[in-house]
Amino acid sequence: MAEPTVIIVGNEKGGAGKSTLAIHIVTGLLHAGKKVAIIDLDLRQRSLARFFANRAAWTAGNGCFLPMPFEADLGDGKALAQAPSAEQLERFGAAFSASKAEGVDVILIDTPGGDTVLSRAAHGLADQIVTPMNDSFVDFDLLGTVDPVSLDLLKPSIYSESVWEARKQRAIALGRTATIDWIVVTNRLAVAEARNRRRLEERMEKLARRVGFRMGPGLRDRVIYRELFPFGLTVADLSNEVRPVAVSLAHVAARQELRNLMQALGLDGGTLNTPLEAAA
Image (tube, rainbow, N blue to C red; front, side, top):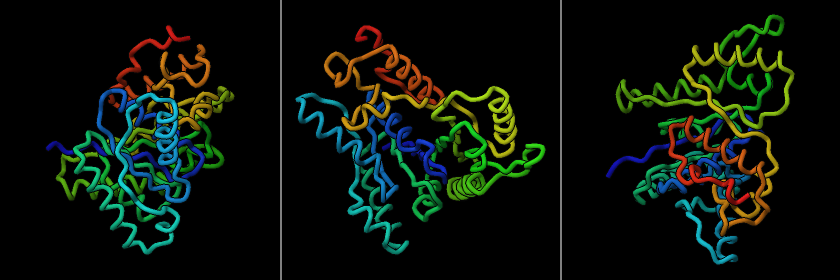
């Protein structure tokens, strides 16, 4: 049996849109016909797990079918968050093994916005790490430190060092050729002053060369992403049969955005390649 690809969605800052990104990657993969398992390590918030619980309830209530991921039971997330580290790691290990036993193609793990024992363990298993950040120097500080006067890049920050450590441990465990593909996506793009964005992009390019990530497109801050969440749906799900909200040209643009993200990650966009314009 082939080993599944392990995708980690993570950084150590909340509010960058990790769960939104994870939700859309999973649904894109499901519509591509991939068998996917999810593990939600944001034990207190559990946004990813709650989204797919909403999806199951909505599809059952509306008599329609949508693909679902496998989710191993971690139990009470809030209780587990208070448990000793050894117990947390044991439960995570069991969930990861159960996911592999399902014969899935991809295991996607959503991590919390902080440095935890579970987040470090998950990063050590990654084939691919997807890190969302908002287009500001506030989020750039997660990845690198800049000089406050010149804005020159001084050094990688703690999270960059954590990814480097995960890469080192993976190379030790699996051999020198084992690598982790790290993609940083600029998420929740907003209207920004052109000079400030140019400065940020220049520093990102320098840091990418220094610490070894590549940059990709993220998801803009669109109403549709929030609007569909209560139903457990994304723009990948919209069709003539699945349309809890009126379809508009904005949804077509959002679907193209998701298609661009999937392509940048090297993943198959599946039915994202079918036109939504006909439904608008």
